[in-house]
Length: 534
Ligand SMILES: Cc1ncc(C[n+]2csc(CCOP(=O)(O)OP(=O)(O)O)c2C)c(N)n1
Image (cartoon, rainbow, N blue to C red):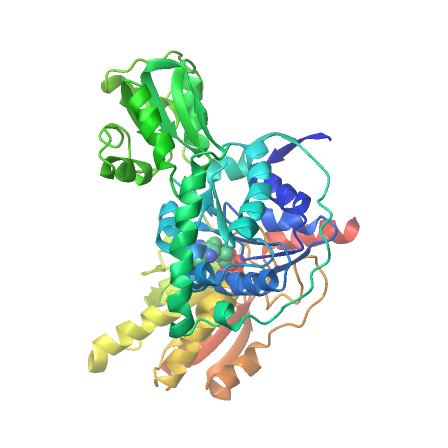
């Protein structure tokens, strides 16, 4: 056994490897990306970037049904994309353990919203574990595989930005030696979710949830730390660490399994202390349920519902509620050194800059998408008018065209990155061509998924382990989805006049047009140089 300093993401990968995980799939997204990248460094695990999260989970389901312990990774909004297979995988269950490691981003450090994915566990009737540091991230990942197989269910492992990106000490162990899988075997009533079988499986799902709910009362990861009985806290994840720092003498019920909740344990804890606070980041997920059982607890009437918690925010809120903290912690956001604000901007030398300058100069309306290029919305370019979710540039433009009808001036273009195009832009383009729309879609191809740290994608010609792969061909793709040869163009990102000419020409054409603007990301260039020198 060794001690290593690992980030939460690295620890999840380590836990998966120690658990004998054989397959890892995922789609990049901060703060989850490094989980699959770290897993790739271990022997004995097949990893791959999928084109999107739905695909990643479906490949994961297949691998688990063939008996392999499988880890699927994504960020919180990725689970929206994967929600369809998620809900039905709950009915189908597993053969090899299936763990979905999903990282929320409270405070939206790098996201378009701050949804609380504990709600997915409830909604899909799945168990969810939430670690509070890297050691737990590793241990809970191993436990998640065991629970998955013991209860025949996928398990969600929830992380948050602070857990995923903070480092702490992890005690490592050996890899579990598992017998080789027998492969996929037929079980039509369990794996084919036609209504007749799904109805039967739903009964099993409810029974399973009941069993896990009962057993959760004795799971060691749901732990009572009894102290002063005047005040008690019910908490989980990073919030537990803050509570422990601020109130070392208080009684704490730390929930390692955040769904389903151990009702008996919680009832006993609430009965054993005078005043109970539920301290949880984002939604009142525990609080609502505990109050629905008729128990008296306090929570969001004092504590913020928006953004990350930190010791200062908790202390201030609870001081107002009449609870003095036992410790003054220096170095929190309020007391600590304030860095000067540094608004984000496209990199100097970024190949996307010229396009946005041209779109700005032409006064076009731009439906945008998610990636580095979303920064084209900000000055000096101010050349983006919508940004909803991955792929929505192509589809929102179609909605505008339809609603404006005759009055539509053909002055709207869609702008999307290469990874985002592969993720969900292509299906929108098929929809546009199929329905006879007339817009211009501009793909900003910088050769990588830059926003999340340079992961390859189907347009890069490379896989997660840098092995060579086939490269998706834009021209053939355009032809296949119904774009005529005259309506397709590829230009160099560093040739402004070619971009100008192409935008003008393609923008006026009848039918859908596709313009690919190619220019390698400047940071990728440096990385490639370093890699070839190594
Ligand atoms: C559903 C979903 N999954 C993942 C992400 C994280 N994410 C943000 S942008 C992006 C892709 C960016 O790559 P690309 O489109 O090639 O643009 P670039 O950043 O390279 O300019 C990803 C994966 C997200 N926002 N939403």
